[in-house]
Length: 469
Image (cartoon, rainbow, N blue to C red; front, side, top):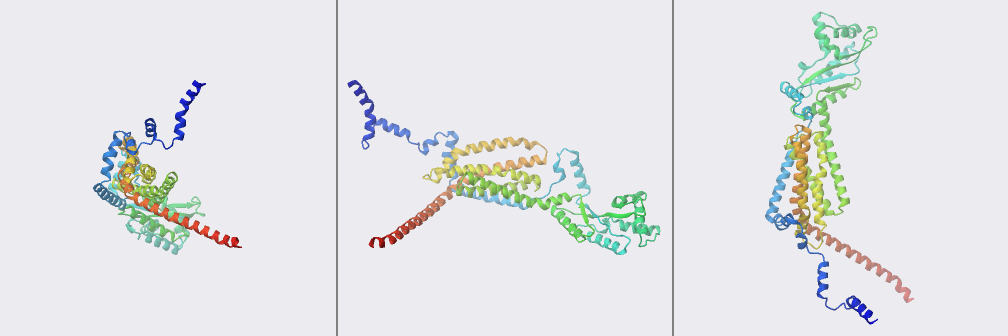
């Protein structure tokens, strides 16, 4: 029993003494255990980040937060925005057909020769679906007036380039000595037979749609068309303007159902909607990215700077792509929307890494920890992606090159924002934001305290008369 008691005392006494002697001085072993159990300070954490961690802690962040560096970065950012906005202002619109082909395709050479030999010209087809009764003189005069109005549109070549069967038929009748009456024989059967003549006149048969052409008793003219020529279309805006003018003229005669068409109409219609669609889709994509960022990073400071970073990155990519021989077309619209995800990635990581640190750290310490953790992975991720898409730069295709240029610019500009711009901005603005938050919190606490005091006073006012009574 004595040995068992002594053994129990020897095993239990240290634990018992440590629990009851709270004010006694700790032993050397307990001090060692407490030191090892405490979380290491910031400096001890930084020692385990490797060479690049020490580089960002000891050299990069102090250099970045230096006043001279801040001024230089501010000037660089202003120049970046200025160049980007200039690029957006001079950006061309429209998708050239040869851009859909490989540059080695024979059609590219054919398109180039067409532009060289027949520059900036086009023909507009004007189809009258419901042809009026051409045996009536007023209807013939109306068709002539409509043709003259179309000949007066912007960039028109005038009557010399108009191909209207009515004028040619009257000229043919005068040359042959034929007398045209206001009857069916002259303006239905006569026009049909004239369009079926040999040689050059045979071409006019393609401009008519006849009903019952095998039976002269029931033969009727259903539809016909004519053409006007335009020239000096130097910019896509000129093409859009001419297209709008001819459509407005056609809309003035709904009973005839006039339709217009030209070879470059697809480009004109595309130009009408491409800018609006790009802005709308780009805006929706940015809003979605901001909402997703707020869901995963519920911090107002993060939301503000991530939003600004997305917008400035987007402006830079669009402007620099314009200066890099990229036009505003559907290919550009698709790639720029896809690139918004890349633009938010690095900025979101760095911003969250900065604001998620301990609240008692200074802005410089927060910046050091964020750069130690994230700067080198951001460099790795961006460089690996750039190297991955670099192979696309050697493919001689416009679509592939636009994709490469977009991804390259998004990554380079995104890294500039994440590793240069955002650390400076966060280090400068965080003290003011925290000061504002503490002031708002103090005001909120004072309001709660006043409300609590008022509620207590109202209770006493009710209970005192009861106690007296």
